[in-house]
Length: 66
Image (tube, rainbow, N blue to C red; front, side, top):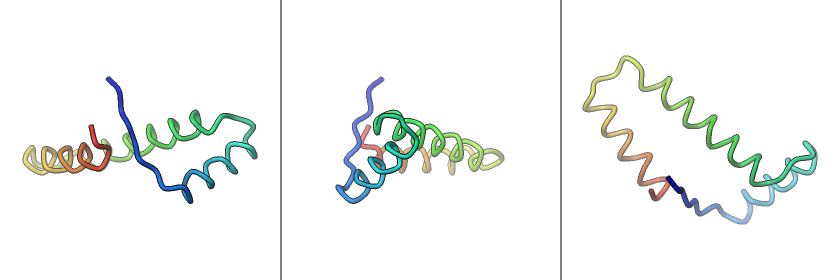
């Protein structure tokens, strides 16, 4: 599966600076941030109704433009 994100230039600049400080690529840092966001979302969804989970998944897909 492929995901395309539209990220503002300000946010890209922050990731570029952080990547340089961490001695890693901007893309790797952004992938880590997205994975952490997905993990946090999965934890937040535990224990909620199936309807709520579906609604949140639809929202996430819209945000990520899947």
